[in-house]
Length: 360
Image (cartoon, rainbow, N blue to C red):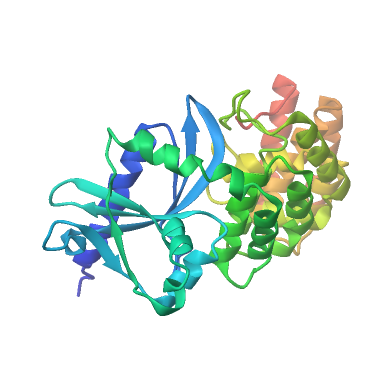
């Protein structure tokens, strides 16, 4: 028996792709959500203006199909009190986009604004929302400008506390991720944001938000594949203080937490492994910490493999000879593991032949 994909799933996918295409055509960032629950959002958009990220992020509900078009040609959808409460308390502005695939048209509505204007509706209804604003190539600048008006109110202290509360709700994956996105989008120029994220890292071992947390943290040491310009970079004073906190606070437990997110793509440009690498390099005494993990038989082979790579990479900055000596010690401790020995031999060979190792 074959498994058939429901038509509604294909329609939903087409609607998401419609919105993604238009957003990315205007050089803005579209991030689809895979942490959804029955109340969850479909995507986040962070806006870019003239190649500079604005730090303004909104959550999107994306509805697809002709069923959202009324007999009079108006677009809308029916919700309920649970959804209204969720959206009213959200740490990000929430908007809905309805995509009519039959006509290749779309319309949007600001849910956050709707609920603020009609607070009684959260409990009492009506729970209908209508989208009357055009979402298209010619009108995208107007949509973006509307959303950018949220930068100031959502950067204030009150919303900072709400974002922290959401991020701390580890039992709710999506609310936790919403908090992370709000902290990064609207509060990344505050040292307190980075102190909280750095201090909490190891508490997210095995959590679904760990991978995006690592991806956000790597903006502090930065690497060549992160898109920044002079207009959107984290303020240098803030970045340097956050970097100091990483050097001071990251320990072996944090290193193990970070190494655990490296996947089959390994350590290469554009991978989560690259993000982990730049974070590991902020630690004090990287070679010693990575060596201790590499020879720790209680850790997975993938974690130990990555630790060997990072140990050699960090040690070579002292000298190739120091890195080779480190690899010799590791080799002696993993004599029974042929795959890890092969990694050690490859790295030692490159150091002897080229005087350095590189993964990029």
